[in-house]
Image 1 (spheres, rainbow, N blue to C red):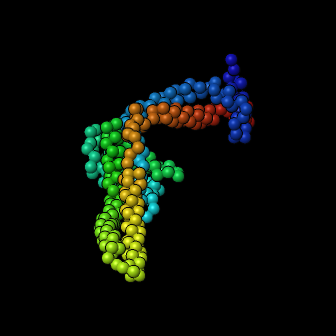
Image 2: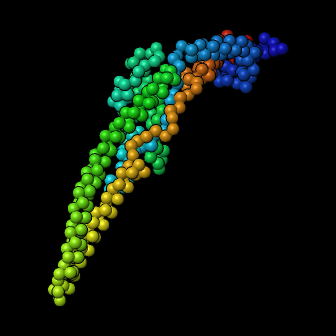
Length: 295
């Protein structure tokens, strides 16, 4: 056991130059350990208790594939980076909240504020996939908010896609009419060529046959060209080339609340208590110890 003189001597050594000396740690533990333990435990308990006062929050996650339109070339309806920016805007979050039915005990304004703070999107580099996350005060609300987020983004992209798809369908209708006209013209030329082959004589017969054959070949080439363009547009309109934004898989909601993290509250409280105990202990120890020149 350390004697009182030893403890005082260690205290003197601490204060000779205003700095902590090598013996201060042992001196502090012997005289102030109870304060450190008590303050740390009490502050940790307070931190843990405060975590129970905070509302519990769940997180919902989903992945979307951004739609594309194959008009002149395959292009996404909206670049993933722009989708990320869109989802961060307050106007988008407000539009989502205007359509979400509440199931918990939190009011619309509180939930809307949480959604604005936590609605996030992350684009996967080099792909057309975007991951969306959002938080709410219950698993049901988190799922509902994310579902409405998906619905609103899909509706926006559908509007962006509609113009290009309508242009493709309009061109397809024109091609159908042109193909019908070209087919009829080709048939008339073939019939005329057959008729003239039996009626014409001599050199005139050969000339007429060549002219009609050239006209028939031209009509046939035009018809084939129109049919090829029609096939190309049909391919562009197929689900493999033109499609709207769609979810990949289902919405996943965290099984347990993601906030508040009670462990962090306890650890933070313990650190605050430890710091307070050290400061008070050092202050009290410094005030009570005699000076180095005291006799």
